[in-house]
Structures are given as C-alpha cells and as structure tokens.
Image (cartoon, rainbow over all chains, first blue to last red; front, side, top):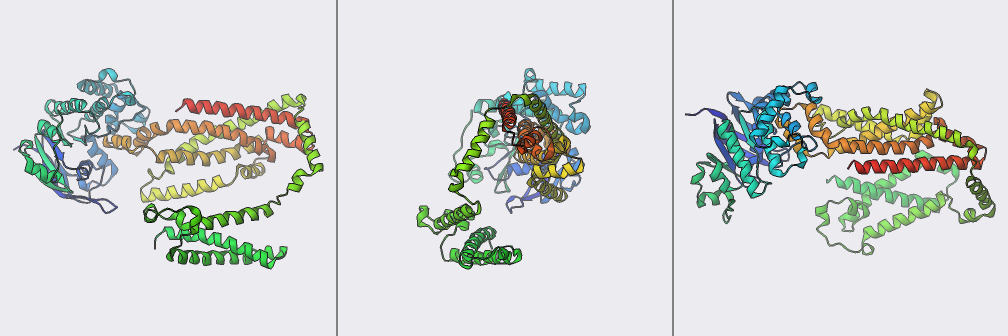
Length: 257
Length: 342
C-alpha cells in the first residue's frame, strides 16, 4: 500500500455570501500519483484546490498533509510553511508581468529567504542555479531574462511550473492549467506536468475540463458535482453513463487531440 | 427596508426643502435679521427634508417615480418597467423643476447683472488693465524668472517629500489589503483623515503654515506637501484597490508573507501609474504654488500680488507671461512623460 500524501475528510467550504462550494468531500491522494479532479464549472474544483494550501479557509472537515491537519493551522507563519511544501499553478498563470522570467521563478524561494533580502532581490547563487535548473527542465532557460508578459501563454505556464518546482514541493496543485491555452500548447504543458510527476516523483492534483486529457494523463480521477464527490476511480472506466452523471444529461464530450 | 431608500428619501427631501425655502422667502419676504437666524432656518430646512422624504416615499409607493428613486434604484428594479421619455415621467419634471429653481436662485445669489458687464466705466477700466498686461514691462523679467524658479522648487519639494508618505499610506488605505478587522479600523481612520486633509484647500494650509513657520516659500511648500500627501494617497490607494488578484495568489502560493506579497505582487502593478500620478501632481503643484504665493506662500504668486496691489499692470503682464509659459511647458512635459510611461 502506497503512502498517502493528503487525506481529505468531510471537507466543507461555505463562502461568506452563503454559497456552499464543498459539501463534505472525502478522498485520499497517494504519493506519486497524478490525480485529476473533473467537474463542471462551479462544481467546487477550484475551491477544493485552494483549500488544500489554505488560499481559502475551509469551514468544516479535515485535511491531513502527511500527519499535519491543515485546517488547524492558525498563524500566518504556519500557513506559509505549509504553502512552501505545496506548489501551485493556475489557469491564468499568475506570474508577475513586469518581472523577468528568472525573477518570477525565484518567487519559489520567497518562503526560505529573509524578507529584506528578497525585497532587494538578493537571492543566493545556489537559489538562482536551482531556478535555472527548473527552467531548463521545462525547456525555457533561454528566456530567463525576458519579461514574463512577453511570453506566450504556454511559455508562461511553463514558467509557472518552474516557479512551483523551485519551492521543492511535495505536491503540485494545478488549477485548470491548460484551460486558457490552445489544444497544441495544451499537450506541451500537460507533458511537462507528466514529466514532473514521473521524473521528479512529485504528486500532482490537477483540475481539468477535458475528459480526453484526463484519460491520457491521469492515473486516477475523482469527479465533483455541486460540491460533492460523485466518482472516484480509474479514468478509463468513465463511460457514457458516468459522463452524463458528472456533466448532466445531454452533455456531449469534446475531444482534444 | 432597503438601504437605497435612505439615499433616495434624502435626495428627494433636500430638493423638496429647497422648494419650500424658496417659496417661503417669496411669500414671507424675510428681513436680513430673520435670514441670519441660523437655528430657525436649519429647523425649517431640516423639517422640510423630513417631510419631503416622507412625501417621496408615499409618491413612490403610489407608483410615481421620483428623481431620487430613478437615480438610486438598483438595476434589477429599473429593469422591471419600460423606459419612457423624461417629459412623460414624474422624475423628469422633478429634475427639470429642481434645475430651473436652482438656476433662478443662482441668478439672484451671484447678483448676475448684464448691466454691470456692459457698463461703460467698468469696461474702460478693464481695457486699461488689458492694455497694461498686453504691453509687458520686461525690466521685471529677471526677478520674475527668479521667483518662478522658487515656485517650481516649492512644487518639486512638496511633491518629492510627499512621495514616501503617500507610498506607505497608500497600502494602509487600500481596502483590499486592510481586510483584517483591526486593519480595517486603521483603513477607515486613514481614509477619513486623508479626506479631511484633502478637503482643506492648500490655500488654507498655507495660511496655517505661514503662521507656524513664517510667511515665505517654506510655508507654501509645506502646505502643498500636506495637500499632495492626501491627494497622492487617495490616487495611489485607488490603484492598489484595482490590481489583479492573480499575481497576489501566485506569490502567496509560494509562501510569501504580507510584505513580500505587497512588494512582489502589488508594487510592480502600480509603479507606473504611481510615477504618472506623481509627475501630474508636480504639474498641479506648480499651478497651485502660484496661487499659494498670493497669500504669502512665496514665489511668483507673492510677486504678482505685490504689483497687482499697486495696479502696475505692465509688470503684472510680464509675470502672467512667465507663469503661462512655465505652466504650459510643465503641462506639456508631464503629458509627454505620462504618455511614455503607459
């Protein structure tokens, strides 16, 4: 039996405006897997991911990251310590547009650099070397000194992956990493995520829209609908019946090749 | 009770109170002494607001849409009824009457008089003045240049010294940063303080400081600085409030603390607008420094008031030329710089 990196138990999130985004979701994330979360927009996928690294505060349930209950963390330094171990990439990349690629990747070292040093940009040579290493891994090292907003969407997402890797995370959360990319670029980014997963052994939890991508990349899949877990299992077993259950009757599957 | 009802009733109440006061003064023809009885007037006006607010509420209940209702009603309420041309609506005539009454009262209050404007004696005086101004006495030019340099530096120092204060205060008075309850209290306090500081004209600050540090450019500079801190803080913090959340989330997910988040996710987004606002503020300050000189803030304004007091119009003409030239150059330069910063 493989080790569990994350154990989520009865996770609930109700927003201050009364919207119940998560209604008691439970599942485990095993070490080294590529877990994909699917579901319609508004099914609670993004909220789920943001609860895992406490970008959002859950309103109920438990999240165990190894032996630590994430939901019990109180002080901001404890939460920062958690985020340091969990990398995240986003649908809109969330880079700093006016900074260079390298400077963006070095953000991954913010948590382990004294505040004043980081504010003057005084990152150690070792940190810079590490940042370059991960830029090479995602094949974009030659763009290190270009401003991030001059890159294409796919390149920006690769910079974001390098930034997350520079944190040396145990888990990488990916919130719709390819939703704003074209189909070809989409596969490039997904391939790099698989590389990160297989070569570096980093566990990945990824939100996706397209089932074709899910079947191709996921080792396991869970599905959310209206804030509840409706499916958990092998991506190959999602047949039409399950598809309609997750996405609603009459939904058509769109393929991306 | 919906919250916009208060705003609606207040606006309608005030318009009603204005009608009542105008009607009363027409009917009763009050004397000067009666008009100076502030508590009496305030009671009438306040009472009329309350009555007007109640009338407005009744009218709206009866389906007649008042001006306040039309202005403040939420979009979803507005969408329920068909839009009619303004002259077929109650609120249209309400607005029309209000503007008409304000205009007529305004004519009396400003003692608007075509007779004075076209009076021959007065016109001759203006002609003398213009003739003097348009034949400048260039012998005062060196002194004028020297003085306007003083004015420019007053404006420069006021802007420069305001930057660090405004920079720090802008983050403390941005709603999206000050979410924590304790921080929100600081935010509310700072916002109120800045609004008060801004609503006191630089001219008034100049009077205060000329008593404090003595008449001269230092007092003028301090006055402009206070005003600049308040204005820049407001403009800066509005920029902070409109930054994209994305980079903030991105940097936070890396484990950044509050200071790092502001520095790396917010500052890069606001630095260009900050510079742009600052250059514009310097430009504004040059113009304001001129006016502040009129009350003893030093610089070209003080020189202007001196010659104006002695009706030496050719000298005044020279000074106006110098001011106009500098203001125009500053205006153009700051426009070019701000354009380039985009």
